[in-house]
Amino acid sequence: MSALHVVFKVAGAEYIISASEVLQMESYTGATPVPGAPPHVAGLVQVRGRVVPVVDARSRFGMPPAERTLDSRVVVGQLGTRVVGLLVDSAREVVKLEPSQLQPPPPMVAEQAKGYVKAVAQVGQRLVMLIDFPRVIGEETSQ
Image 1 (cartoon, one colour):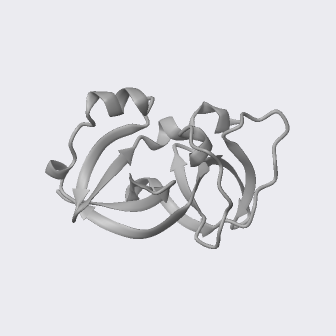
Image 2: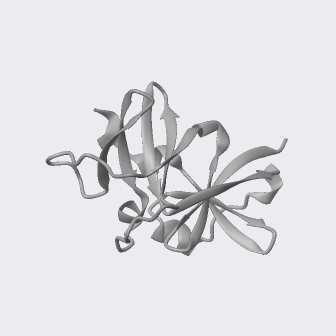
Protein backbone atom coordinates (compact mmCIF):
# COMPACT_ATOMS: atom_id res chain seq x y z
CA MET A 1 0.00 0.00 0.00
CA SER A 2 1.47 3.34 -1.00
CA ALA A 3 2.24 6.01 1.58
CA LEU A 4 2.82 9.75 1.43
CA HIS A 5 6.21 11.20 2.33
CA VAL A 6 7.38 14.78 2.83
CA VAL A 7 10.53 15.63 0.84
CA PHE A 8 13.02 18.05 2.39
CA LYS A 9 16.52 19.24 1.59
CA VAL A 10 19.59 19.59 3.77
CA ALA A 11 22.85 20.80 2.17
CA GLY A 12 21.58 19.90 -1.30
CA ALA A 13 20.70 16.28 -0.42
CA GLU A 14 17.07 15.17 -0.46
CA TYR A 15 15.48 13.27 2.38
CA ILE A 16 11.98 12.02 3.10
CA ILE A 17 9.94 11.45 6.21
CA SER A 18 6.66 9.59 6.39
CA ALA A 19 3.80 12.07 6.22
CA SER A 20 2.16 10.14 9.06
CA GLU A 21 4.94 11.43 11.35
CA VAL A 22 4.46 15.08 10.29
CA LEU A 23 1.95 17.36 11.99
CA GLN A 24 2.81 20.47 9.98
CA MET A 25 5.57 22.53 8.41
CA GLU A 26 6.37 26.03 9.57
CA SER A 27 8.56 28.82 8.22
CA TYR A 28 11.68 29.27 10.35
CA THR A 29 12.11 32.74 11.81
CA GLY A 30 14.61 31.85 14.52
CA ALA A 31 14.68 29.88 17.76
CA THR A 32 15.26 30.76 21.39
CA PRO A 33 18.58 29.15 22.43
CA VAL A 34 18.52 26.68 25.32
CA PRO A 35 21.49 27.05 27.71
CA GLY A 36 23.51 23.84 27.95
CA ALA A 37 21.69 22.14 25.08
CA PRO A 38 23.69 19.94 22.68
CA PRO A 39 24.93 21.76 19.54
CA HIS A 40 22.32 20.11 17.31
CA VAL A 41 19.44 21.54 19.35
CA ALA A 42 18.63 24.83 17.59
CA GLY A 43 16.41 25.98 20.44
CA LEU A 44 12.73 26.45 21.12
CA VAL A 45 10.01 27.81 18.86
CA GLN A 46 6.34 28.45 19.43
CA VAL A 47 3.94 26.59 17.16
CA ARG A 48 0.24 27.35 17.60
CA GLY A 49 0.67 28.23 21.25
CA ARG A 50 2.91 25.26 22.02
CA VAL A 51 6.63 25.43 22.89
CA VAL A 52 8.48 23.01 20.61
CA PRO A 53 12.16 21.97 20.78
CA VAL A 54 13.89 22.09 17.38
CA VAL A 55 16.79 19.93 16.18
CA ASP A 56 19.01 21.39 13.42
CA ALA A 57 19.29 18.70 10.72
CA ARG A 58 22.55 20.18 9.38
CA SER A 59 24.21 19.94 12.78
CA ARG A 60 22.72 16.51 13.51
CA PHE A 61 23.98 15.17 10.18
CA GLY A 62 27.49 16.59 10.75
CA MET A 63 27.16 19.20 8.00
CA PRO A 64 28.41 22.78 8.15
CA PRO A 65 25.97 25.48 9.23
CA ALA A 66 24.38 27.67 6.60
CA GLU A 67 22.59 30.97 6.52
CA ARG A 68 18.88 30.42 6.96
CA THR A 69 16.67 31.68 4.14
CA LEU A 70 13.00 32.21 3.41
CA ASP A 71 12.97 28.56 2.28
CA SER A 72 14.08 27.25 5.72
CA ARG A 73 11.39 25.17 7.38
CA VAL A 74 10.67 23.43 10.65
CA VAL A 75 9.11 20.03 10.03
CA VAL A 76 6.97 19.50 13.14
CA GLY A 77 6.32 15.91 14.13
CA GLN A 78 4.88 13.93 16.98
CA LEU A 79 6.71 11.13 18.77
CA GLY A 80 4.31 9.59 21.23
CA THR A 81 3.18 12.50 23.39
CA ARG A 82 6.11 14.74 22.39
CA VAL A 83 5.91 17.37 19.68
CA VAL A 84 9.32 18.19 18.16
CA GLY A 85 10.68 20.05 15.15
CA LEU A 86 13.42 19.39 12.62
CA LEU A 87 15.03 22.45 11.04
CA VAL A 88 15.71 21.85 7.33
CA ASP A 89 16.89 23.98 4.40
CA SER A 90 13.61 23.57 2.51
CA ALA A 91 10.51 21.37 2.36
CA ARG A 92 8.03 21.84 -0.46
CA GLU A 93 7.02 18.50 -1.87
CA VAL A 94 4.97 15.44 -0.94
CA VAL A 95 5.44 12.18 -2.85
CA LYS A 96 3.60 8.87 -2.85
CA LEU A 97 5.84 5.80 -2.61
CA GLU A 98 5.11 2.09 -2.77
CA PRO A 99 6.87 -0.03 -0.13
CA SER A 100 8.74 -1.80 -2.95
CA GLN A 101 10.40 1.52 -3.89
CA LEU A 102 12.13 1.71 -0.50
CA GLN A 103 15.42 -0.17 -0.46
CA PRO A 104 17.87 -0.65 2.42
CA PRO A 105 20.71 1.87 2.28
CA PRO A 106 24.07 0.55 1.07
CA PRO A 107 26.23 -0.58 4.03
CA MET A 108 28.64 2.36 3.68
CA VAL A 109 25.74 4.84 3.77
CA ALA A 110 24.18 3.09 6.75
CA GLU A 111 27.48 3.28 8.68
CA GLN A 112 28.24 6.90 7.77
CA ALA A 113 24.69 8.05 8.50
CA LYS A 114 24.77 6.75 12.11
CA GLY A 115 21.49 4.93 11.63
CA TYR A 116 19.66 8.12 10.63
CA VAL A 117 18.88 6.73 7.15
CA LYS A 118 16.44 3.79 7.08
CA ALA A 119 16.02 3.42 3.33
CA VAL A 120 16.64 5.00 -0.06
CA ALA A 121 14.18 5.43 -2.91
CA GLN A 122 14.19 6.71 -6.44
CA VAL A 123 11.72 9.52 -7.12
CA GLY A 124 11.82 10.27 -10.82
CA GLN A 125 15.51 10.75 -11.58
CA ARG A 126 16.40 11.62 -7.97
CA LEU A 127 17.50 9.51 -5.04
CA VAL A 128 15.99 10.38 -1.67
CA MET A 129 16.82 9.01 1.77
CA LEU A 130 14.14 8.00 4.28
CA ILE A 131 15.19 9.19 7.73
CA ASP A 132 14.50 7.54 11.06
CA PHE A 133 12.73 10.56 12.57
CA PRO A 134 12.82 9.40 16.22
CA ARG A 135 16.55 8.66 15.96
CA VAL A 136 17.35 11.98 14.27
CA ILE A 137 15.39 13.90 16.89
CA GLY A 138 17.10 12.01 19.70
CA GLU A 139 16.36 11.81 23.37
CA GLU A 140 17.74 15.29 24.12
CA THR A 141 14.39 16.76 23.18
CA SER A 142 12.37 14.59 25.55
CA GLN A 143 12.48 17.03 28.46
